[in-house]
Image (cartoon, rainbow, N blue to C red; front, side):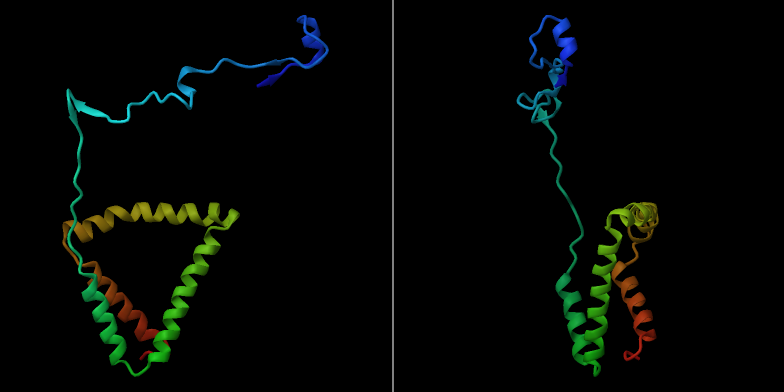
Length: 151
């Protein structure tokens, strides 16, 4: 709504009270009447249906492997401490990145790097059929060899 000044309203023949003028609504801006069809048709009488397909990943075997490694280690307090520190630092970094100013300064560049890394990850893990589990395991082994208390 656009409010018209009292002087203009008096000049237009209005009363001393404020006169309000509204702009006409466009036909597509009505929230009551949807103008897009609910079901989009691909052809005469045909609708589009897509079925998702993915490789089956056995997470039980991954969890079993991690549990076996934890049970075999003699340094359970160090493993628990470093795991808690890693999870805590992850949540702290997420909190810092999403603060109002830092979200603009850090969040966008991090998302951009992630988007730019997608083609490399696609080629490595889909086209070349490398295993992400093996890569994560070797990276974890490199890190744990450098952490104090886990040698």
